[in-house]
Image (cartoon, rainbow, N blue to C red; front, top):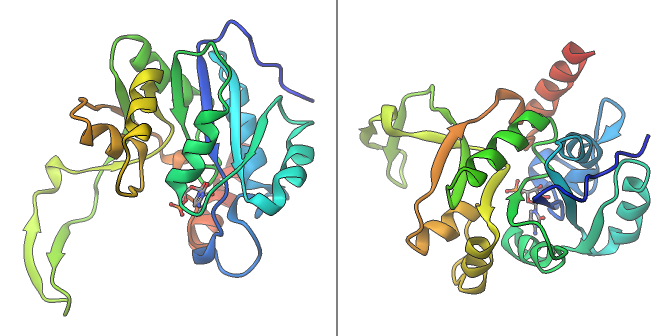
Length: 231
Ligand code: C5P
């Protein structure tokens, strides 16, 4: 059944999905790999679309697959699909340019975090609505972390109590994200990094274990288990 988005919602979600997925092994763009028989992107969009605050969703697809992604998502939710770029940041910028007027809160999500629950979408959006300019969901780091040199010799042990692993969706006041992308020089792996460079404070909210990033075959196996558990 196609989800309906509420036009009164104040949140637009950008979903960069144009990555090649090389670390997942051969088999085409990562967002279109199957999890429980459905593409990762379909799982991600279904969860985003069921968050009540979301009024618009923009997906950046691999350029050759734009039409295929439009057809794939048409039965899932009303989604705008644009062509992504060579780097994630370019894909996000392309999606940002296609956001309709209206929503004042922009969330940037990864198609690769296909099982991020809609409650996480809402909690990030709520923190922006409550006054934070930029919000990231985080988890504590459980492993001991070492700094090493190029030869693999340990230089030191990092105090993990001050470290956090960062997930998506990351949330922003629209004007803040637009300004960060407009002045972006170097390519960074997340959007909060761009905003930090502008001197804007970034606030943390609790992340969710199901929002794991599906990068390697092991992650896909874990996601299959989570999906089975949920059924
Ligand atoms: O490569 P990485 O795992 O960091 O990608 C994170 C997300 O960014 C994925 O959903 C991927 O599809 C997307 N991406 C993109 N355009 C690129 C590279 C990655 O939309 N050129």
